[in-house]
Structures are given as structure tokens and as C-alpha cells.
Image 1 (cartoon, rainbow, N blue to C red):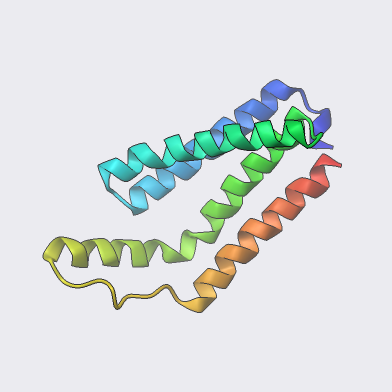
Image 2 (cartoon, helix red, strand yellow):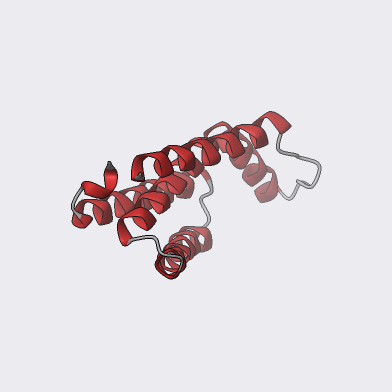
Length: 127
């Protein structure tokens, strides 16, 4: 279904999902190094994904859809943790220890559910 869309639109979807993910996570984790490293890492990972998909016999359209869906799932899955990110940052800036702050299990399960669920939806939409 999505693979019938022109590839230019899929590139736009991939760019928009990367930009949205980078902007949101950059506002939740306001470190300059993170704001630079996160998009670079994600784009590099996306390029590797495209190469691996092409080697395994998947087309460019399928790779772009999966890349976009992974970003959407990651962003949705990290929504409940944004308060924890800010709390850790504030404690870190005050010099307080942050090693005792743990991500709740329900947030971990929600993150995994979102990434896997949206990836499966993207996979279903490529067939």
C-alpha cells in the first residue's frame, strides 16, 4: 500500500519523522551534544538500514517506510518518560546523584510496545 506511493513522498516522510523525533527528544533532553549526535546517529542508522534492506532484497520504499515507522514508534514510546528526562537533568545540574532514578517497567514495556507495534504496522502497510 505505502510502496505504491512515489518514493519522493517516502523520503519526505522519513525526513519529517526524523525531524519530529529530533526536535521532540531535543526539547526533552536539552544537551547540545545530544541535539547534534541524535540526528546524525539516526540518519547514519537509516542509511545502514537502506543498504541492508537492498542487500536482503527489499526495495527502497520498504526501507523508508520501516525507518519512518521506527522513528514514530520511538517518539511515541518515549512520551511518558519526558518528565523523567527533565527530572534527571535538573538533579544532574544541581550536582545531585541520579543513579538511583530508574525508568519504570511500564514505561519500558510501553516503549517496546510502541516501537514493535508501529514497526509491524509499517511492515503490514508495505505489503
